[in-house]
Amino acid sequence: MCDPATLIVAFDRVAGNRGARTAGVDGLTVADVAEQVGVPGFLDGLRAGLKDGSFRPLPVPERKIPKPGGSGKLRRLGIPTVADRVVQAALKLVLEPFFEADFLPCSYGFRPKRRAQDAIAEIHPRHAPARWTLGGYAVLAYSQRGLAGSGGEIHVAGPQDVADAGAVVDWLVGQDGVDPDRVGFFGSSYGAGTSLLAAAKDSRIKAVAGTSSWGDLFASLYENGTRHLKAFEALVQLFGEDRCSKEFRGIIEKIRSNTVDDEVREFARVRSPRHHLDAYNGANTPILLTTAWHETIFSVPAVIDLFSNLTGPKSLLVQVGDHGNGELPGLFGLVSKPTEMAYRWMDHHLGGAAGDGATPQFGIRSEYMHDLLSDLRHDSWADYALPRKRFHLADDAGQSDGQLSDGDGQSGWSRSVRATGRGTEAVVAPKLVQTGLAERMGLPHLCKTAEIDRELAAIWTTAPFEQPMRVQGDLELRVTVKPRAMDATIVAYLLDCDPATGKAAVITHAPYTLTNQQAGQATTVTFPLQPAHYALAGGRVLQLVIGTHDEFFADANSTPTSIEITSPQGAESYLDVPLSPLS
Image (tube, rainbow, N blue to C red; front, side):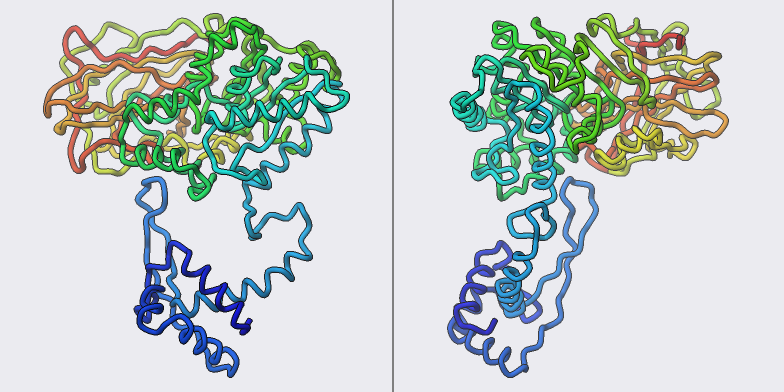
């Protein structure tokens, strides 16, 4: 470790880090060391201290810095001195090769140029191809540039990734025993989008299966004018911002600063399968898509829209849970609905026997919350969605909460909610992905609506249902909003509440953001909530909660302020719910 060459390399690594401009407790940055002491003299003194045992690390001051995602939470950041950082880097240079020699190829934790997400990406191609080979056809599933062991930068399924996919197909069809007319593409999440976009450009791809897919990237970033910032920051952190291309890093900064311009829209457009419908329909490409009711990464309505506008062979699976939950066992080599459907899909359209021999499901296949054993099938979304029942938001004289009434519309009432930058017990998901996994185990997140601060949210409730009911399809909310500022965000949640316990689970939700409004001006807004399929037990009530903040979204509210929710004559507020008795 005391070798001069080792210390020089260690110093270069410290100097090349982003923290080089930050001083430790001694007040010296890397630049200060170079200017005031000189690198050779600094390293000679450090080497002498290490050799004679007089070197001692100095205390490490800590700073609290914001966590990514705009949650307002902080994490601790330790800042050692430059000397201590050089010694740490030198130790790593010396010790790391010894540990690396004993690691197996399957080891990923705390290793150079390896991350947990690389391990997940590696699992994907390891288990699936062994099964695909039984089919007698070729199905591609690979790690795109910048991911796992692939070189290059992350472009988020951009033109470079699509060109890479074409090059992989070139290589594949040149291999002995590969029938160029029996090539499919399979991918999950990022890979699903890439698979769909590649099929739009390459007619040699005869069938596609995309799990946890996306239909429109812009709709996944912005819902009703509101940024999905928490999910976006989670993806950026998963990718590693230093791995992202210059173009993508520019888009990252624009989304963080809420700059929605033509560059952002074009970036999303070319990466959105929804904008390549002519190619899919012209080639009659068989496409299997999967998503989840409480998907937090990609837009569920956009996936349904993509599916509905495809004219070739198509199938859509919608499951309980969140992003990647449903297919996760299958990617580990176990059984899951998405992967078993993918095997059947490729067998049917490419001709083979990787699956169980069953005919694939066309149309829509779904589970309802929160029953994994449920399995409903419909030919189209129009057949799937129930007729909507209208509930009017009404005042309940003398009560702090309002009613969801199936009578005539009621005007003239108002509810004021404060925007403080603080949310309530009603949330989209306490944890991305993990909350969905709990739902799949029958453990949805619950809150007590009686504990929701009525200054921060307004609540309307139905009468108890005498029999079990089902919510199935598209929902729509109309309210009139009068903010005190030019910009305002509201977040609406529909809850299933048990009056006996006061506990409630989220059925669906949606935000809405108004911008450049005249302060104090009333604006009527009508917007969709996320589609849902939910079974309500008899005696339960539906509750509509409207607040101003959820950590999942980047709200536009200037705090502190207040927003008035009203119901003027001729534009009475309502909630349309696809509802019928559970049969």
